[in-house]
Image (tube, rainbow, N blue to C red; front, side, top):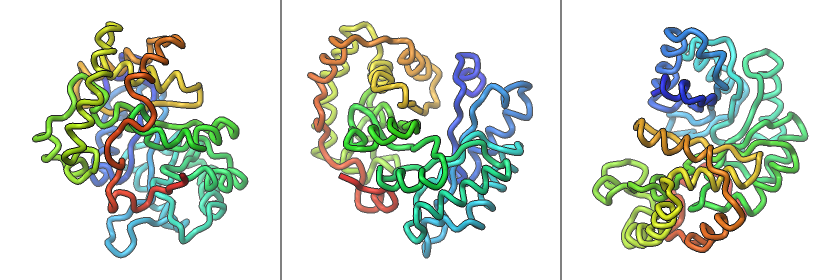
Amino acid sequence: MLDACRAAGVSHIDTSNVYGNGRSEEIIGDWFARTPGARQDMVLATKAGITRSPDRRFNNDPDYLEASLDESLQRLGVDHVDLFYIHRYDRSHSPEEVAGTLKRLMDKGKTRAVGFSEIAPSTLRRAFAECPIAAVQSEYSLSTRAPELGLVQTCRALGTTLVAFSPVGRAFLTDAPFSFDKVQSLAFTKGNPRFMQPNYDANIAATDGFRALAADMGEPAAALAIAWLIAQGDRVLPIPGTKDLSHLAELIRGTEIDLSAEDLARIETVLPVGWAHGDRYNAAQWEGPERYC
């Protein structure tokens, strides 16, 4: 898959120390080691701040973050990353304190740029006053548009990139959304409000119109979802994930579509703001992300 991404011109890899308990980073590091030139072709991002301790789920202590980054660098087989995120902001520290820690990691050459994930615009502004914040990662798609209530605007004003994860709505915005049986087999979705009944059936029905529109336009639904995000401005970067080469091709196709004002209006008609049934997270999943609206 990584070879296919590189061949297609994909140049950004996003991972974390908790993905597969470090296994994701090891796979990427192995690929770099056996693929000459691959590291130079990629913007490499990783994250830290989520712990495996039931006593403290999030840790932004300076020593902890630096040790976590050092371990990530070892697994990745590199001496620095291009972007290091705080995966979850730990409210026992001020945004300024955490940004100061990130700046010190930059000064040490362990990362070229820094970012946060799932923070409020106010937290971003406070952190940015201490250290330039290159990126904020947040869920953003046609099914999750809360970032438009402040985060998109703040990122634009500061010159920060909004890195949009789950850009195809966890498969709802594709031509092959997860079946309800599949949903029940996945740890995240089986307890997520949007994938529980009756919300699941309502969300499938709501997105049927989007799939029909994409077909009418001659495009895969996933491609249209990616194209919509890109059309939200040059400070929005979608980061889809996939294990399937055909789906990868659909996602890449989305970067090639230039949507007109009429196209955007048609999309807005079939999926207006607030169409999704159910909250994007359950109570446990909301632990860590900052709500701001």
